[in-house]
Amino acid sequence: MGFADEDEFRVIFTGEKMTGLLGILLQTQAQPSAAAGRTSAPIYGYVPIIIFFLIAILFPFVLLGASRLVQRRVFGRDKLMPYECGIDPIGDARERFSVRFYIVAMLFLVFDVETIFLFPWAVIYDRLALFGLVEMLVFIGILIVGYYYAWRKGALEWA
Image (tube, rainbow, N blue to C red; front, side, top):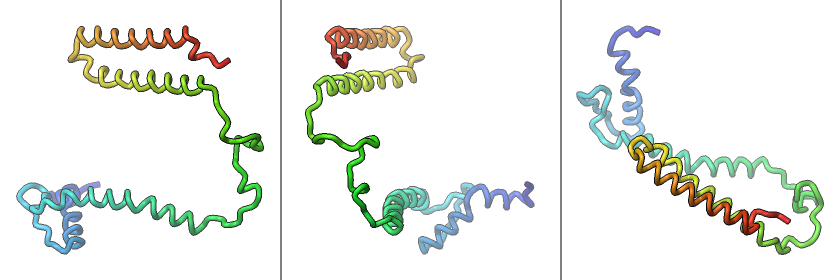
């Protein structure tokens, strides 16, 4: 793909056509400055952000409205029944669960969130040198001690 001259290349790749279109949409005149394809009005820098936010706000409403238009409005007995993995529900939904479920969930969250701290350390590892390595070994050691304590106390046992 060749360009006839340098002006055609500059117009296509610097966005002068886009700023002219935005000038028409905003009812202003796009004034190119000395910088290649830049406009003198600072509002043009915010137009893509505003368009993005408008799309982000309108998109869910448009999809919800479209689904409302095409949804099926006939509800039978099977449709109104609670779904529970394909098995008919038995008993009350408000039954008590063992506290072990919550303990395992909390342990998972604690260890999962703590391991997230490994990523920033890995990003700046070269700047931390030996100090960073020792600090991370202490951090991982504390995690292992906590995991071992939970394991020995039986927090990870289901039965």
